[in-house]
Image 1 (tube, one colour):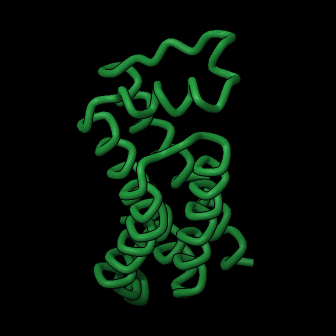
Image 2 (image 1 turned 135 degrees about the vertical axis):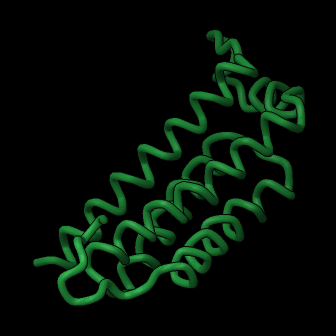
Length: 137
């Protein structure tokens, strides 16, 4: 039961972190979506026109979401598979985004590498709670 709770909390944390970082990116670099953006070539042109810092913020969001979600899942249930599952779900969301919106090749690679690196870092910094230590203390 604790593993399921940890996994659900980790996924929720990953989604919240990703949404927060992408909201920051959209606040600094707004993208006007209109009716003609339904055309794939228009979407590709809008994506290509985004400045590099906006794209880097998205990649940082992928890393941070996997790191934060995996760390929380590990902290709650202390099972490595829960952290890696959070990372795989972040990757699945990234792949869905890559299919629907055109991205540069380096972002396509980062969509896989950044969440894996985030989960790996979370596994490395996680330590097993000591007996009597508060769960999130």
